[in-house]
Image (cartoon, rainbow over all chains, first blue to last red; front, side):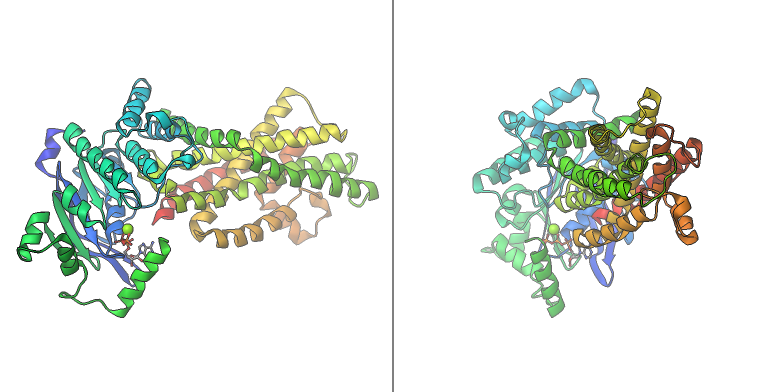
Length: 272
Length: 256
Ligand SMILES: Nc1ncnc2c1ncn2[C@@H]1O[C@H](COP(=O)(O)OP(=O)(O)OP(=O)(O)O)[C@@H](O)[C@H]1O
Ligand SMILES: [Mg+2]
């Protein structure tokens, strides 16, 4: 799906993208450009607006104002074209536990309109790629968290999307499982030229996996840059944790107020 | 059209797989109609409390109880949708390029499977209780069509409510609040003629009444539909189509 026409522009491009929930502005005039072929990381404290931004880019949530294109198509005017070009793994573990891994993938294959002749080869390939071939016939509710995540990645890449949106893909995974997800994402980029946009709270992940990072604070982009540049910008000894604290903590910028803190705590509770 | 059918079939097939894999829910839903027939029906038939003409009371309410169980098993389908939303399954369906109408319609078809199981249970109980029902293939086909249409209609209604209330707790409350009145303000367990005028008006606005009316004609030996099958099916179809249009608009708001 990576046609040459697409490589002229950006995989995702937002300008002035805004989403309000009542009085709360979850995403506030965000401008962002994600080049094709990059693994792009979105960082930010709980409630910073990462998931809301991803939901808009994946057409799940209409913006209040502003504009964005994904895969060269407008998210509001051409949502169907956008959907055909993206894969998405939500923050929640979302594979259907009452189905087997294979059945989950078969449903996706049909919904994405993969020709019947290609389906089983593609599904077998995706399962093998994610190391799930042996578990394909087991119910997903018997899978471990890491296996569910890998299944979801298999599901999201099945139709070879140009852009993958992954909302905290490695949360709750053990180090081995986390590294295997990283490897798979790097493979996807190398083999299919996929662009990957992930959110994460894991600074190691941000540094090791991502080519470029955007740090959100209270619905705005605080900074964009390569991990090394961001660190260098804060001094020779700065770590990614320092970078995060500097830009996402809000200490230097607006400063967190009490209602922010309450909001953040609520979000944390909501997610258990 | 081809794409619509393929996508709807994919969604419905998944539900069918789950249903076959774990049929406990569907059998527990079958208990209630059995009680209505065996206990309520027999008692009222015995005391001759409700005059239903030539047709015995048990035969009279059998189609009503089928319609009721179609309603009750379809109406709780909204809970399943809210559950799927909390799990993120709905997000995944909505981010696919499948058309929204296919997703919503596929779910309605899957509710139809449940309705068909209810119908099978009712026929079985009727057989055991020596309630004679029509057995001509055309009549049975008509019953199946009515049950599918009714299941689709009420499950889509339920989906719409789920999209509005969005949480399980609120849905449970509203679900109870709507189903009982819909059941009692219909011709399911007493004929329209016996109702006070105002109730008859309400009953005639209630789609359940048209389902019962059609089933009564199609199931009871010597029974007939009061409104005529054409009217019954046209009303059910039109309401279903209208609800589908609303559901297509509301379903995506579930994940907002
Ligand atoms: N549907 C909604 N209705 C009302 N408020 C919402 C809704 N979705 C998100 N919010 C609020 O918008 C803000 C941003 O939420 P969002 O989920 O985008 O944050 P996040 O950066 O993904 O946080 P986390 O790291 O905890 O996942 C939060 O204050 C959240 O409570
Ligand atoms: Mg989030």
